[in-house]
Amino acid sequence: MTANKTLSRETVKKVIQRKLNEVSYRFYNINQGGCGAFALILGNLFEQLGFEYEYIVVVRSVSGVHAFKGLRANNAKLRMKDILNTGWKHIMVKWGGYYIDSEGFYDRINDWEHDAGCITKNELLEFLAPHNYDNWNSSFDRSQVPYIENELNKVVNKLQTTI
Image (cartoon, rainbow, N blue to C red):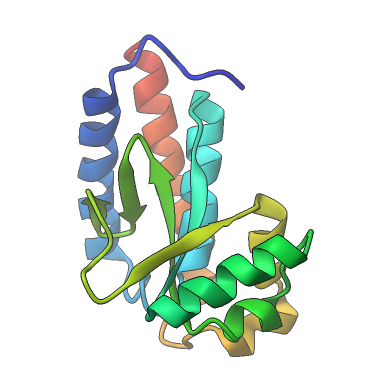
């Protein structure tokens, strides 16, 4: 899908940030075990709007970055166990020069964290499969996912009516 040229990046950011503020207030612990599910929902939102984006794996160390890049160079598809070995910490969406999670937009990753690289939607779906739930922080209540998805779909509707 091609990028939607009728919506400015700042308009999209403003509308999404407003919804993120509401979502992070209403739904607890998204970034403590729900970051992957949230990234998937947000990626789907960008897809519906016709914007290009990436799913980003954030790791804790430079050695984790090297491990990730080595795996990416050697494997056509990463598996959850491959990612676990990199010391991964977080999944975000990268769009329009921003890193985005459930709490907002960031110009860069924190000084003590590193952008290891991107994963495909299919790889993220595999990581989110029920047989991999033990690899995620259990603080996040997965029953919230459909409600979060419903809230973010309101963003798509709002932005489509502003075109």
